[in-house]
Image (cartoon, rainbow over all chains, first blue to last red; front, side, top):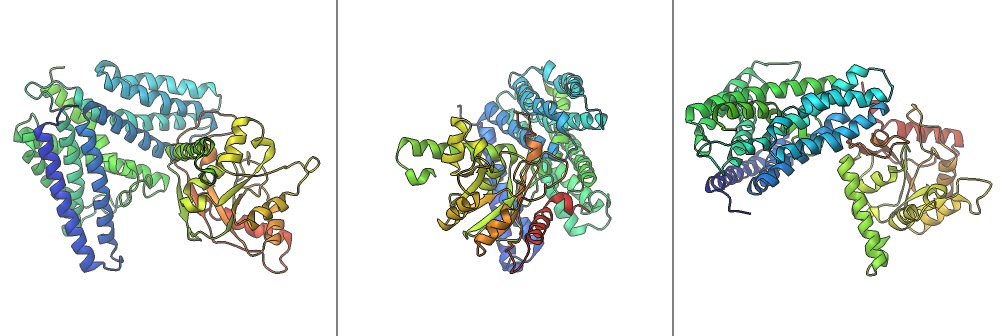
Length: 316
Length: 220
């Protein structure tokens, strides 16, 4: 393994400082407002900060590990997300083989294609090949009840949990002039902008939130929180342009795209949760619900960020 | 259990197999225990659960805290678990199951006596009062009378209803590739045989207590 790039070290050190500050603030708030653990907002905040530590450490290790680390980490995220998604679908016995294929063939093949950087195939493997082959496997079992709904659910699960998510490690395959060896920083940029936007929307919403933006879908989201969060996250993104191949203006534009997609992606995933009658996708991360609850905004922004950067900056 | 025989090769193999099975169960099901009616305290208990898959007791075993895990023995049918060397190893050595013969005609020992012996030796038990795996659409099969006789033989040991959710979808009967899906194990409030309670009343009460833990029955 080669030494991590100095910029990556700087980013990780920066995140460490932010987390330490957050932990100190969380500790003080807890001592002041919730010494007996009764203040729900403070307790939730501290749960989130603890989960943040785990995520940043894992993410940091993966980024230092380079292509292998990042690909393995996101393959596992895809697996955990798909497991959560399929749990909430109405699949039945007749879908058994199609589901087994989704987990044990489609998912590993997609990440293998990402690993060998075969752009032409990983871009269409799930939208074309899985899309056509999976319903065939399901049809062979002969159960036609709710057939369209069942195959649509499985295809949607694969698109969201595997296809979209795999575009995060795919960022490593881009060939950007003057940026060689630093591609992991594109991942750091994407993830930091998405997550900081979530945090800032939460903070702005708690401070100024009045007007609900989608009361049916996500009662905690407000116009004030969204606008404040999106603008301040865009500003943070512009400020991070030093770690990217972009100028500050370009970084601001891409951040805005990431933030908007992340926000609306969150709404879409909330709509699915409402439809299924659950509050969280799972229970893996304390304070954050399941994997998909944390991944949803990244998932929606990753493919578009990837294609914009590929079109605008990459030679391959 | 492996730790009692620790040191020798066989013991190491048994505890390795136990660890692998736990890892595999978590990987497939991300199983979580929900202690709704009882705390995970190291008291002697009889966990009675719904039965849809051979992996049922593995999930209960996985969510029990480590110390309780090694003091808890599943009660299982010898016709299945003695069939091959592999099953015998997993059933007898790894899980230390109390193997009972479900066939009244051929059996030489009374299952209730076998279970009370295990209880008297200090173990907790996992039992499946439906008597067989539930392959129907109904959430629960009618309980066999074994649970009543067990409760009557050892009235001081609490019976904890334990609902295992989703494992039947992970591995339906006849399939050999499991599908990763999230499972939960919910422990309800313990119950005991009341004085002068009839067999019918007790079985109905314990069935209802178990069924009430099913997330599907709580959906509004």
